[in-house]
Length: 332
Image: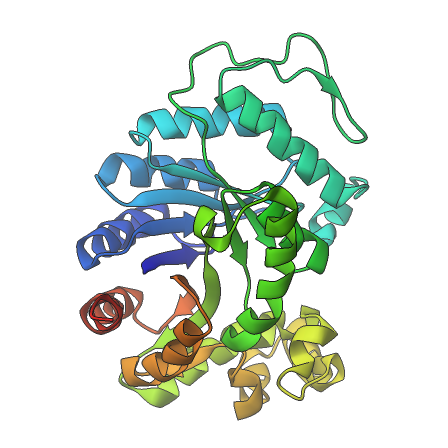
């Protein structure tokens, strides 16, 4: 079993250093940081984390080839892999269409652009010329890194749609599918396996992380409140397919969205989050967490990735997972 932590890029840089050091001490294998628009820079955060840690792998979840040119993504990946001593994993995907609209960028051929980017970056970090003419990317004969990459940097694909889930199995070293709720793994697995079949690989050949939201605390109400805050902000944007698994619809989130985004009343929005909505993630003690994770592992999961909010006290949550959850599965 492998275990990782995922963070949004909305915290002070020194907090990531502290949490990464705690995660390394607790036995986590990977530490991921997102690169959402107009928040702190994941490349800077991960550079600080690389210098402050020794063993834990670090990764971006995710960079996209619309706001960052693939050549620059390759430069960043090879440089951070060098800085970290071969511990960097490159998480990429097409990104959020909302972000592109904010910037006035066209969101054309998202899956094709990602697939062509994967192919180009694999060549560049393998110290090969990436010159090619594709549908989305047009590379000249000068497309190569001017320094030596120590290795081909592993690429993980972020995915929620069926086609991108298939792409994980088809071209990636690993995958970061978001599971809302955690049991959604049963639905995404066949899609990943279709891609694996096309590439002649099996699940053993890739690192497929089951990416969940969790909020841990001995105080059940505090844990639920922290998770409710996350759900209140993002719930309305989740796909109908995901919500249907919990008997929910996007319309159920309309009053919450109005309270948060229109009225600016976050407390009201949190109060409107129902127990049913809270099952999008996992909130409570490590016992609550283990109940749902045992079922997830029974489905075949071999990498659990714990994502924000993690809890009212993030450092305590990292320690709790390291003390109770990781040893639990290490015994199996």
